[in-house]
Length: 419
Image (cartoon, rainbow, N blue to C red; front, side):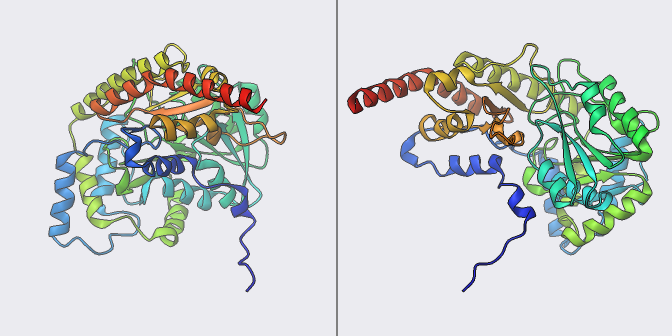
């Protein structure tokens, strides 16, 4: 029987490394001892009770059939009200808001609706690993613009050179995964000027919009002069309300873009889970104090893990990242000291031998033609965890230097025996 032929586009990207690292962590035998999964970005603590109870009440109230394809009216109203309360602008829930199955589907729906095969999409690198495949699946070509350590800034001239008559969209993720960078108003204005010059749509992933620290400000691209009519703003329930498995996301876009996005969304997934949308609507009505307490809590978690990873030998800039819930570290010293070829090998060894799940930084970059990868020395940690989880992470990280020393000694002995 002949083998099934697969598509050329599917061969252009690999599976999610982030989710693969979680699977590797979960596959550890119980005999391996305690461990912590600091790889995939999901909280290990409970979602808000009021949100869960609203979803339970909806299920018991027989809200079990299809909601309106582009979102239950109650949730679209709640998104409009929350947007107005936070940013001073109320989008039209009937003409400008679409509910999707998570921000992931929202991004895919936006690109499929707004980008044609052969168009170009500007993507900042390192990037959340979905953006490259999303661009390829939409038939477009990604044009990568580097964000450079230690503060993950872009060169305005390099960015300008990436725009041309074929550019249809630019993807901006702020606060940023994997770097934790919060784009400044000035940086966003530079991007906005290019969007207006070249008639380009800005697709902004703002799923971490409430997770900003140290006085940083989250600025919406849509709120800059001239950008509301050319911006698609994506956010969702997952990070702000600790419910990554509910898969409730949304898009705010001008009416003509919303019409196209809704058509694509309809044939991608039909709609998000109806009772969970009612739970999401309840969450969006939380008092403003909820968001301040959330950011304060995450700032403390960041500082706790930051001390642990630095003590273990991982390097981060000072001041630390001011948004999201990730630390993208330079692991060069540990890679060299442990005799690893790159961060990917170190990350996989850490899961198996040290009980620490992380994500190799190479997954946030595209491989170069010469086979190199700028993310090779990088490791990403997430800190959306309970205090006791972070305490265990501190202990396991403190043991890492000794484990690496033992590995070096064992490799040295094996080399001598081989000689």
